[in-house]
Image 1 (tube, helix red, strand yellow):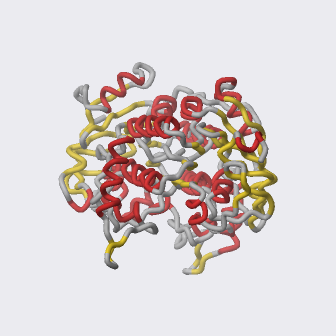
Image 2 (cartoon, helix red, strand yellow; image 1 turned 135 degrees about the vertical axis):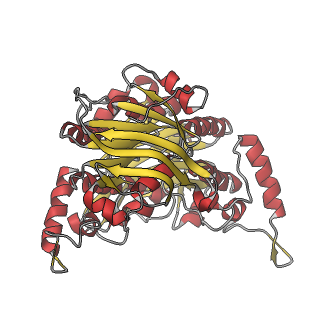
Length: 515
């Protein structure tokens, strides 16, 4: 056993993983030291999640070997990975929605007593873990009733309960609020102090610069370099990742807003399962040639507001108008076909049919209209050609072009498919909820340019974002939502993160006019 090998918690040597039509990992060597946070950075589809799925036993590589604590490991499935002390929090959580947190955590490693499940030892151990790591979780709550932040804490507790020493976090902050991100960072620091080794997959350069010791950058399935964080910068990392200089803050020209495109008055929408009023008396206008942002901590009514505007949830009171057209009680299809495009918050639940190919997903709202459909017959040749054009324009990384199954794409490339479809529908109003979630800096730069182009073309955009830099960089006006109400209107050129944070926390509010 060499001294070099024992320096590392694990090594992946010369890993090659091939899928039909694409080499996802091409002769990659990746080494993580003991008790370090090692960031894995790369464009959407660069092979980051695939590489970690090989380590976790979800995929078997064509070539290469894995060394754990200086010894060669055979990892054929996730159970083997757990035996080697490897745990993984996936980008899309692997939780059973109608199980409690406790049931999910012990799933696969249950304890029994006299032939019956015995949850008492697990509950006692988990109470110690939640206290020690400050991971607040209601063990008896169903997953479907939890916020995404709490679901992530359940995933972390699954790893800790199994006493994993190598912890993989795949895009862990993609669905978290700034406050939840801060909690996660403190948890990771605590885990490293306890002797764990962390792999942190992220597109967010600020987070990598803060939490990581080293960073390995992938591009097109190959390693472009490994750097010490203290010796690099965000600009250098983004250039390593994309292969060119990236404009981290978009160039926004001044545009004078025009007439009102969408008018919302005194809107009230119920919360989940009809409990309480999640949206309470909200009024605002979206004008031609502006980006209006709704900012706020997740869970303050933004989701329900979007559901009401798009028809996904019944409006209890108030009106929604597009010009002179009152759509308050109109169907989703009516709104989509006449006025509205929508980039949804949950790309799996409301954005894509994962078993459909890209072409079929591109025509979900238009399959019954010309030129896609004539006399009820879909022109698939035209649909595939259109999808291939958008794939090229939006740089969707896929193995089989328009015929690629949506479920086989990386999370960021799934998002690109939705963004391409909704922007290219050319509606007067676009509701964009977390449009750059899970995207790399190059893709974010491109999407921001597309949103600003729509604005310059006279479209109206309602942006709902938890990314404060995105809010400040591309918005013309900011409305802050707190506990279901609009509590402030801010000019991004005349405010700062601190003032915005006070409004988001409910510590400050000012009267807001509808327009």
